[in-house]
Length: 362
Image 1: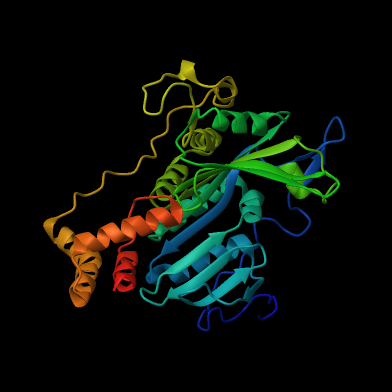
Image 2: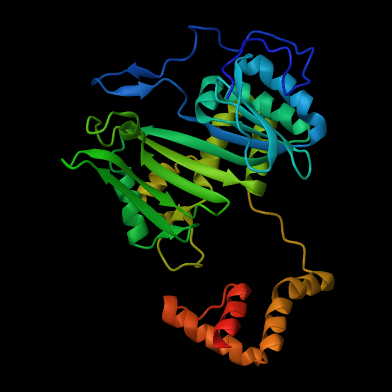
């Protein structure tokens, strides 16, 4: 890695003529991390609602425009870093913004804005920045939003209790997080709602414990509700953020925090109204409005699409059976029996495993 450099004359080997303007925050004027309040607790001075991560990807032709937009925001202190897999070059600004350039297949770029940078600029400055990126043809691939809570130490336990009572809607799985030292002191507490692989993931955790030294934090003072959107939903949300007036942004983030999940009684799939919500969730959602982030209907698969699927997935299995002289139906039965003995399921999820089962049978 090269060290941080001031005012580079050549960025990415060919950058020239950049407009160097002062960053949004000059040295010594950055927002403070915490502010002391009444009972000696510490409360961050940033907004209750905000953005905690942004990722965009865009066309090769707009690379210079993006650099021209980022430089005035983040200053010119940066270092050249190893690129992500599939990219040719990358730089990371001292503020935490990272730009990977020249994706090997398409030449596209990827821009990642970390949480501390989002917090430093706030919603008022991020909104026009997002609008400019969209104007450059960029598409959001990830956006994390947050809601910070103080004075609600039981919320994590109440959410876990709702999950145990099976009143959680909108996520098929949940994972509690409990971390303690050998002496029994809390170092982490929270719950994940949803899968890391899905396009929506909710995290509720004790931010105060995370920011404290191990064994010295106080449980339940500062909680953070964080929602991670990916792909199409992320792109829809950032377009809403860019289109709203600054006074409406906090309300939009609040609605987006509530949107993905619900805690209601009854059976899954039953039509329920707001009165059936869990009491703690009713309080959490008080004042929220409906938000439309549903995915667009999928295009029906064409006959050509079905043929492509057969050629990609079924044909290799058929060829393996023919090669070894085995009836495909018999091979499927053998594989299902093998899968059931292995992990208790009768679902054949991967056709390559069927080919391997044919070879084992042979």
